[in-house]
Image (cartoon, rainbow, N blue to C red; front, top):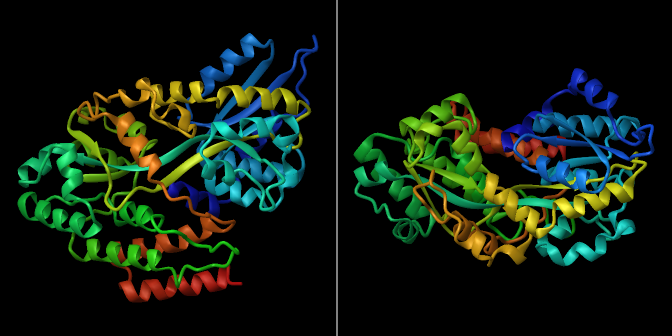
Length: 423
């Protein structure tokens, strides 16, 4: 998903898509008989469409659900908000996007005005904080899922390499990232296969495992002085230097084929990636298992449902998203798609704890991701996190592609940071 964000940052607005969605934008929908109609922008695999339709039927409202690509939803929303027209009644916004939106909270209805405070106890505190404006006075959205990290591993490659295959024994052996690299060297020696599809897959989780990421609590950029960032970069460089990664982009056609062919032995996998793997490589069912990642957990992704200011039906919109994102509904989405709930009250439920995945070798993925979620250390993403992520990700990719050396690529990234974001 980080790659997708990069495309959003550098990509131009998709004019045709904007026109299509704007033409159906929210705020003015009201059918002739007085029935309220809500226009809702989502992207694929959010898994809440049927819940929205169920709510609409039970509450006598109409809904116009528009599904677009992930980056198009954000680009179109940004364009519509800036133009002051064409925004829907409800729009999904990903976690890094919500920080960008905090620069203009008045582009959205403050959900505190419609009962939002009563829902606070339903959600993880760190996820709730992400939805608040900087001064805490504005609630921009309600949380959908979160992306706690685990590790998918290819059982046959581990067995061929003489590594443990039992998921608890794998976690015991891979307690640190040094252990992880050592195991990668064994797989490389015994099978000739890579250990990861790309170095960014490891870098992205490591940079988020510290107490801070790109910004400190005062909003200062700390990339160059943050040991978690430099350590993640150094470990990614070591993986490249030792030939333990391919250059297959997550979600690409090559990546999908690699999952089936066993071109790499592990994939760092936030909960939502379970669905991505299953849909991309159905023929690999039973070949992969899941366990915990080294050195704790981390979070990647997770979104919010917001109510843009143009909506003329903010109370109806809020009531809908409050029900759709309630704990019991989030549990339903997890069972169907693997999107992990942001509502901790369901983490100990038998339904979640006992949930297993046949695709992932009957792994107890509910229990695994629950434990991963509880180990997440909340960090501030910050308003320019998308730009910074792209700059640093590009630095890693340049080295993987043989276009630059580790030192030179890092220096170029720091210069880009200063030029584009420096303050």
